[in-house]
Amino acid sequence: MKNIKLILLFLIVFQFNGNAQVKLDDFGRIILNTYLPENSSIHAEAKKALETKLNQITTINGMGGSAVNPRFIITAVLNVGTKDIIPGPPQLIAQNIDVTLFVGDAITNTVFSNTVLSIKGVGTNENKSLIDAIKNINPKNKEISTFLEEGKNKIISFYTTQCDFIIKDAETLSKQQKFDEAIYKLALVPEGCKECFFKISEVAGKLFQQKIDSDCKAKLAKAKLLWSGQQNQNKAEQVLDVISEISPNANCFNDASSFAKQISTKLKNDEKVRIELELKKYNDKIALEKQQINAYKEIAVEYAKNQPKIINYTNLIWR
Image 1 (cartoon, rainbow, N blue to C red):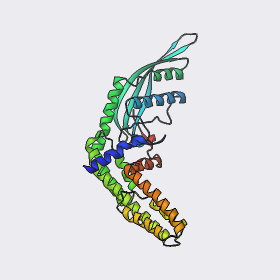
Image 2 (image 1 turned 90 degrees about the vertical axis):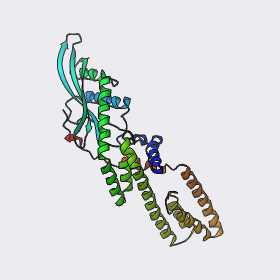
Image 3 (image 1 turned 90 degrees about the horizontal axis):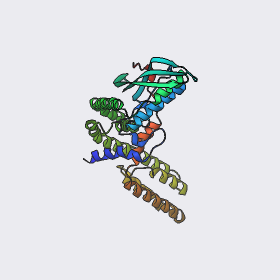
Image 4 (image 1 turned 180 degrees about the horizontal axis):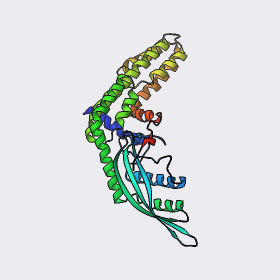
């Protein structure tokens, strides 16, 4: 039960921090990334209007957000049905257009759901007529809501069927000391996938503990190596900087804390006062961290921010 609470906090706490590219509160949610082909035949202005509309659709329906996971996308294909010229002045062009919306998996090139919307637009040229038609798409349309719900259910089904593989992959990464990547992959499992979400809770707790224990061991070794040379005020401050980065929940934390105190006893009185002041600041920081045990929750988002987009959308063939 303790570990289940841990992962719940791990995912929910992402709402408190973030940046423009990757937001903490996007972990634990199903997010659809808007994608339109680079070689789209429509004019750039109309393409931008369509991208904006797709973003509105996902945002209004609670599936918009930053690209923490570029795998699942929403895209659209436009087909002009009829085109009529309305005499002027000014002469206008009216178009009837079918917009096919798709939700799917960009990695497996699988369509999860689709729907066709019939829209109309009028403008002084074909491009403006198309933009007018796109603007007439209602993001709150019941057909759109049903279409998104179907896609959402398919994504949940994906995580349900792949859950054991996701856990195994994370455990393999942890054995390779790739803790950040392992935690990131577990953090992508949405809360809506309850069966898998609770399965990964215990694993996430264990991997986080392994990460901070490994980090503690490495930093304590580094601190001791620093102190094994010249033992003066400058070195003491460097050692304390290293030790201050150790999580208070790590298994070697008490050893690190004791080592920091030992340093103070070996210095001259004037230096000792300075180091004891630094040590007090360090202990105050640790006390604060114990109250805010969510420092590790940024692991996944920091990992995501530093990753290049590895999915090649150009191979998608959805019609």
